[in-house]
Length: 388
Image 1: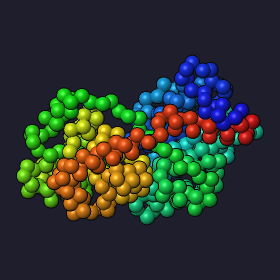
Image 2: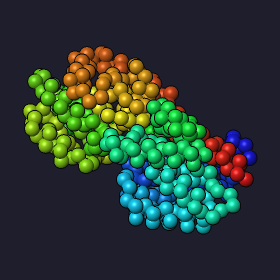
Image 3: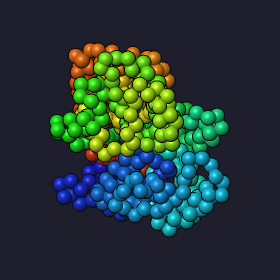
Image 4: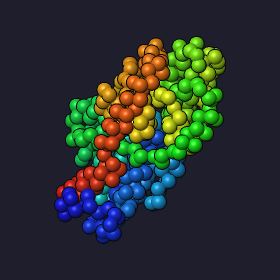
């Protein structure tokens, strides 16, 4: 079967799947945000294309994915726990031996290492092809970074194909000796809010006439929201005073609230997880992404698709995503530079509007989720055909 044949096995147009007997197992670790959405889109797309699909991962991840496929709980934590990890690999080995997938697609280096070890231990004449998608950079702590590097090397040696979500990850895994391709983790355009919905979201957040600065993300160190809170202190004396809105939840909710409380006159509002993010984006004067690292951040894509002016850290895959004209890029971890970039846009509405239009035009060139799925199906076809 050719690559193009499987790439066309979508349910669009009533076409019958060209390769319905193919079996794909998706294995994910603790995933949220872009990684979880990416796995959900792939699993649903493969199911609609007529492939047999099973998703394995921690219960919390399976709950976030909400895909209509077979799902099997498989504990994969974000740090080593020998007894739990041995049990998980044993369960996975037995399941792989019984279900006999053609493709095992793991997301994250821990999930990739678990899958590689289970495949090695499974008793099969023809082993499944292993694809590993790397979504994240190494952790900051030295011990955790060392473990991450070991898992990267193991995945590089064992995987048939390693996919990376940004250029810096591609360079890193290629240096490990992996067969690497860069892959687009895309965000389908969200619903377009009405003017009334945007106005209602803005009215709920702050007083009329005040600029609104918006950040959306998990409340974790990687997202750099402590830098945003510190930057907000530098625009608290402006008239009218901006309101800084942080949407999301996570482990640093308490410390960030305490930091914001210490500078109460900065008016930083932490509103938790929200379902009206598109309306908040439409209402925002500036969208800020102060992350210490990102691959292809979905909030950046969503803000660009909404045509909003963006100030983002120059890290990971963000510069490739925005280019130099789709956002103002600043150094990570620098509240002074971040504040200067935000206030410059507030002082120059014409420039902010041009920036938003450039972001919108660039977003129109992003690959669609359908294109990304077709590309993945083509990769699966090539790998599967080589084993059959």
